[in-house]
Image (cartoon, rainbow, N blue to C red; front, side, top):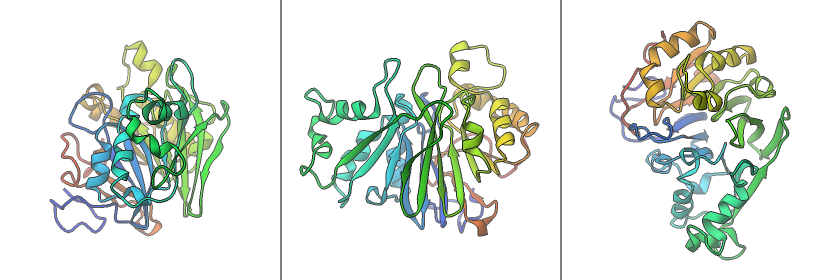
Length: 324
């Protein structure tokens, strides 16, 4: 089914996010193999994919199906280094060999902690160390050995701080640390042309700067990994329940809420989750599926497009009805 955003057929071919500024879901799942690609998103500006946020398994394929080009990317930003948020990074880098990229590619990510490497050490271990996982791609980490160079940038903002971590002529990206159990993790805000998207990543949504980070955002992208009232202590330490996400969206005054990172346990509880959120947050709530594109264009208002065939058909509830 295709809603608004210039769609002319219900079963369109894979398409880019055909808006001035848009946010597209590349992967709406979590670590389970549940038919969804794992976590990843892309920001479109003027028909070009300019920033990727997380790179879970399956997202690189969906990036290609959306006719995005690695040459157009200004930055890749990783929230943390769990595999369902980072496993496709080598696929992006290998694919770039067959393109025409000729400028550095910054890759942002968290500092080391609790057994996780910094993003710089992570990339060295993938590509550049003597015993790297993919040493044949090591030239991308060294000057003069490939058509461009990867630029790892380890981000270390303090708890409660919001730091500008990337800026160019069109967008500004800010980050703050979030709690994801013991795992070093970040949330990001990207501002472009007067619009703002906040991507929480995996978090318990209790970090002190999250309300400020999300303040008056056009769109907040929240990972919906657990239902309300779960009794798994590990899951509860890693993720936020629907009520906490809704309260954050309400307190920050965000306009729309996009729920992604669906796991089996949360997808089975989707109707209850939507009811819980609607009882707290009065803004528009969107259920994320692979390939969905949210327009941030001022002229588009609340236009939202989902074409299940565009990237990966998914079962579950439709956004055609906004009621929970």
